[in-house]
Every structure is written in C-alpha cells, then in structure tokens.
Amino acid sequence: MPRYNYTAVAADGKKVKGAITAESPYAARKQLRVRSIHPTSITEVSTGSESKAALFSIFSRGGKGQIIDFTKQMTTLLNSGIKLTEALSVLTLQISDVRFKNTITDIRDRVISGESFADALNDYSDYFDVIYVSMVRVGEVTGSLGQSLSTISKFMEKRRRVESKVMTAMIYPMVLVVFCITAIIVLTTFVIPKIAEQIARTGQRLPLVTRGLMGVSYVLTSWWLFVVIAVVVAVSWGLRRFLKTQRGAYLRDKLLLSLPLFGPLIKQRVVARFASTLSTLLSSGLAMAEALRVVAEVTGNSLMRSAVQQARERILAGADIATPLRDSGVIDPAIAHIVAVGEKSGELEKMLKDISENLESSTDVVIERLSAAVEPLIIIIMAAIIGLIAYATILPILEVSAGKF
Image 1 (cartoon, one colour):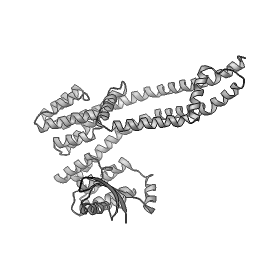
Image 2: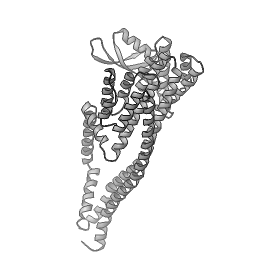
Image 3: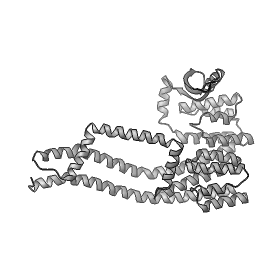
Image 4: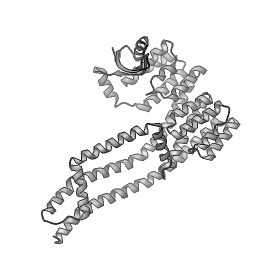
C-alpha cells in the first residue's frame, strides 16, 4: 500500500508534518480529516518498482506537454459522448508517468465518489494551475466541459509556443557563455601556471597582465575558491529570500521593466500574458471579477498583479478597469485606452485577444532582433577575454625570447 508524506494544519492551527499509509491520496486525506487534521499537501513516497518506473518516466514526455496531451485526449473523449469518469479511466491506462498516473487515478476515484472534477484538480496544483481549475469549474457548471478543456489546451499550447521561442533564442548565447567560461577556467588553471612557472625559473619578472591572471589562477586552484563559492552561495541565498518577500518582488519586477534592452520585451510579455489570459477566461464564461482574481494570481509580475487587483476592486465597486491599468506603469496608455473602449462597447474579450496577438507578434520581432544582436556581442566579448589570456600567456615568452631578463 502506498505511503504518503503530508503537510497539514492541526485543529489548534499549528502546522504539522508526517507520513501516512493509504490506498490513494484521496483516502489519505480522508484519514487525516477524521483526525481533525486538514492537509495542505500530500506527496507519495516512491519505493521499489514504483521508484524504477518513476526513473524511466523521467525520459518520457512530461511537464506541460503531458498536461496538454491529457487535456486534448479528455476533450476528444468527452466530445464523443463518453462520461467523465469513463474518460479518466481510459486515460489512466495509457499514462506512462507513474506519479501523473496516480494523480489521475485519485482524481477519478474522487469524481466517482461525488466530488466535482474542479475540486479534485485543485489539490494537484503542480499539474493544474488556477486558470485550469477555474475554466474546468465553469465548464462543469455550464455543462460544456469538453469545450472548456478544448479552450484550455489551445491556451496552454499558445503560451508554450511563446515560451519556447524565448528559450530557443537563449540556447545559442548560453552555449557560447558556457564555452567561454570553460575556456577561461582551463587556461587559467592549467596553461598559465605551467608557463609562468617555467618563466619564473629564469628570474624574469612577469608582466602585470600575466600577474593578474596568475592571481585569478591562484584563487581557482586554492582554498580561496571555497571562500568565493561560500560568499556567492550566501549572497544568492539571501537575495533569493529577499526576492520572495513582497517588497523584494516589487523591486525585482520594477528593475526588470526598466532594463534598457530587455525591459520593453519583458513588459510586452507581461501585458500579452495578461490580455491573453483574461480574454480566454472571459470567453469560457467566467465572470469579470473572478477572471481578474485568477489573472492576478498568474500574471507573474507584482506591478501588474497590483494593477489587476485594483481593477477587480473597481469592478466590484461598479467602476471601470482601465484606470488602474493605465496607472500601473506596465500597460501603455494606448492599450489602456483600447481596454476602456472595449469595456464600453461590450467587445472587451475580442479587443484583449487582438492586443495579445499584436503584442506576441511584436515580441517575436524583438526576440529575433535581440538574438541577432546578442550573439555576435557575446562572440566579441568571448574573443576579447580569450585574446587577453593569450596575450598574457605569450607576452612573457616573447620577452624571454627577446632577452629581457
């Protein structure tokens, strides 16, 4: 019988952790609730053959692609007239990823027991985010679950394509950077020390640039390297903790949006994500206030999140949403004006979709131009650094050859 690690809130409000054995995550949650313990997360402990299967599942298609495939297959089955529980049972037979298979099995069992599909999905936020759950909930209420799942799969594919373009543009520059760093480490830790040692035996004083690189080499080949690593780790840990705070996230996002070259690109992506997500949620039948609540959770930028939350408050108070968006500093006045016009004309969903498509097209152009500019820039920097190392290596040899000792 599977064993699960859990994090929960006890009856007295204290956070507790532990392990429990049950037939499924749903059964584990029921056992904990009987004890007046309210679980916040439950993770299966893989052992034996399940661990081996999980190891092999690493090489299978996972992540967002796996969720998209599952959603597409669910759409096909439901639109064919197959019941939800039967569709989930069919899909559990063909899922190779052990952890995901257990997840879908548990969701199916909970739906069979009378729980809503959206509530069951909500406990697996690692796979199904708040957008997914919200749209499924609307589909269940309106009786159009198949259509909602179709909309979700298209939305996820579109978002993945945008992210893939950014990642693809970063691959070549990252390869160049890694190669440059590797070359610097090899030259400064193996080549220069041996050459400097030979020259030092002649009694010649090493040139300044060579002595500087020798200092770098000394740091990389001695216990000082551990000091540098410890400082970097400590600073990174502290910075990461700070960025998790509300103020840290705000300063980080504000800094990113003000970057000279990448700031406009990041701003376009944030606004495109906002427009695309809100348009998709509204088209699925979600109310404006609820749609804005969901968008605020997934916007990925604290400035935009604050603006969306203010817009939601204005909607609940009977006012417009364009003003807080305009004042956020993230959305351009022209786009905010389009939102205001769409809100008044009742075509907000269509205009948001147009904004998203236009910004994504513009983002593609910006990414291509930045990629075209960054790649040669990295090559030049890499050539300059390696050239400096080569100069520092050859210079003392030339001086020895010229008899300057």
